[in-house]
Amino acid sequence: MAHTEALHRGSSFRRSAIDWRRFLSPEAPTAEARRKILRQRLFIALGALVVLAALGAGAWWVLVAANYVSTDDAYVDATSAIVTPQVDGTIASVPVHDTQRVKRGDILVVIDPADAEIALDQAEANYGQAVRRVQQNTATADAGQALVAAKSADLERAKIDYDRRVALSASGAVSGDEISTARDALLTAQAGLAEAQRQRAAQDALVQGTDVAHNPEVLAAKAALDKARLDLKRTLIRAPVDGVVALNNIQIGQRVQVGANLMTVVPITQAYVNANFKESQLTRVKNGEPVTLTSDLYGSGVVYHGRVVGLGGGTGSAFALIPAQNATGNWIKVVQRLPVRVVLDRSELEKYPLRVGLSMTATVDISKS
Image (cartoon, rainbow, N blue to C red; front, top):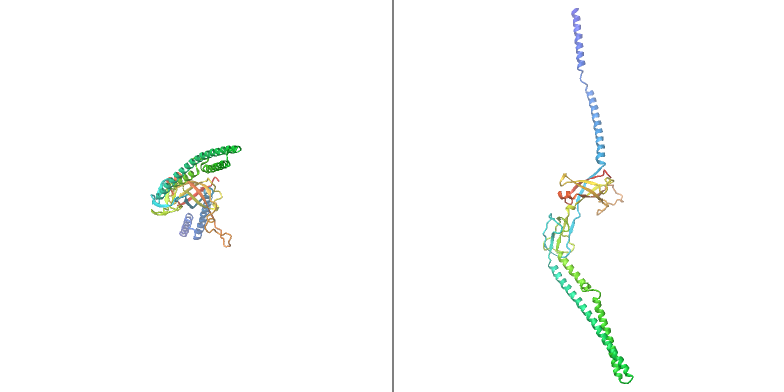
């Protein structure tokens, strides 16, 4: 009996110990419970990510999107100078080549000057002849004045002689034939004076009111001479601006006409950027706003600074060779782009030169507009 009770008490003690271990080390949760806990944690993490994304998007909008507009549809451009001859001739030499940098006034093309030199000699001869003709006309006009004076004196003598004979005819001292002869002499003297006066008027018309240097004939000859000198000077074609030679398509010995396209000089230090922004980005873009730019040539390590100087007068599609016909039934709305011109800092261009046509990325600061 006592042994049985002892065994019972030992068994109860062991059960109590087992229950105590269960209390200290509870059983692992079931698979369903683990999935539930995992879902809760995933939902919490997802919610946190959504909140962080919303905060990030809000911060990006406030700090960036609301204050800047950007496009990578931007390209370098410049007002290039097209070199054309102003006189006809044969190319004698071309001392420059493509990609060569030139300064304003450097010789680009030499046209054979032989024809221009002959024309200059002819113009100089014509000018000399014109001066001599005008001097001769002046001398002739002076001689005409003297002839008029002489004819006037002849007329006066003929008139006196006629009047004397008429006075003597009443006494019969002068015959009728003598009076007729005196009358004829008077008429001849009058006609001679009239002819001399007409000649003098014609001669005065050539020189009246001017000296030799300002005579119209001399001025016309001088203008032809100046043109011949200018044509000779134009056989040396010089660079109109500082820049880089491009599109040099001429050869020595080639015959060129006035206005022919010989080459192009690109003023790279005066380059600008045409940035094509979407129409929805241009609401707050105005002249004078600062712009930062990067080029594919140098990468993001080189940043250019500029400013907006103007917006284009129309979109690219509006000025296309075959513009879109928006009134047709198959019209599809497409977001249009408008070119925005940006001038660049000259010092930065000199340090990191660009070339026409290079790609750029432009960002306009509209925070103050």
